[in-house]
Length: 421
Image 1 (tube, rainbow, N blue to C red):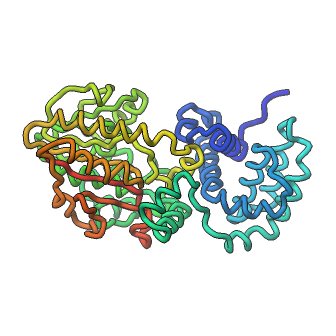
Image 2 (cartoon, rainbow, N blue to C red):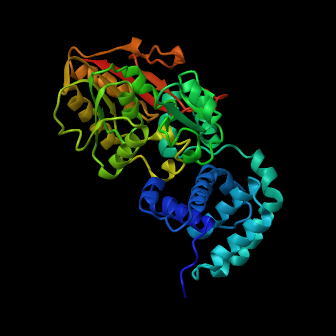
Image 3 (cartoon, rainbow, N blue to C red):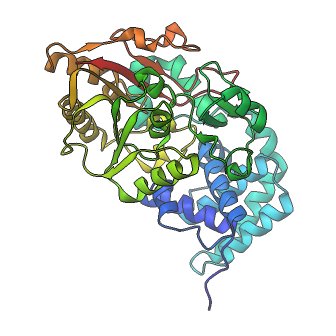
């Protein structure tokens, strides 16, 4: 018997099986080519369906619990979850239910459960949409929710969860005139200078993409390079540079930029983005801890838990359990020390992480100040147009959160601070 024909729904269930059953990140799966057999529109649809299901997983499980005496095998459960989310978000009942039944029939191990799939999803088609709207926004998993509640309080974390559930619009950074780019793409100019599109569609089809007038970058992620404020001719290092948004910002400012990343595959994306935008940087595949050099300024976007990006990466809380965080914290400390050793006298280091955990942000800076005499935080560097003074932290950095700018559509969670040697 031949393998089932790939489809967006079948592929979405496969993604769910891998993320929820094998603890694999969606980015890893996509890089491995698991969707490559699908046409581009179907690849995008499969990814969107899986992401929507992960965002709504808590709601879907709550509704399904009413119709299940016990949880079915994970593969079957994921078919039900996907169907529930689609039905509750306005999917065509006939198509969703029939496809779900066909998915389970196509798997010999679970074909006998086609009646369960059919019965449960027909009930969901009838009652689900109304019940969905009455159900609480899904909470973060305990491994992450507990430390966030300790750091920010229950009310703030509930706002984070609302922002995660809402998802994220598309932000772009202009190479030149941001207002002109906003007009060209039909976007909105944000207070900090990024351009936001509520419904971007195919990114590569937007005006200015081919010409390299802009690149995709969350508004929060665009701030570290602005705070570093490199000048034309300065010798600058972008550590952990991929996928390259900050490298492009530094190069566009006229700096002599070296972009370094340990991953050759990820560095290919930096090279592609440089070529598309017509910007120049020296790209190096190397370990940040062993690189040598002397620089006027360094931007260190350190490896972290990425817990600030859950609006975009709904798989992260499900594929991870926090076990890797202590190792990441140690790596961040080592990278800060290595970067400080590469600064010229009077140089500056912008340290940042896309994490919501203070241990990967504020605490790292506090400890760096204790380890290095003469090191200081330049809090005034964060006084940029559009930056709310309430975002500034006690040690002089910026703490950005997904619930900030709620009317505009939120932002990624980020921490950043400018250190002067």
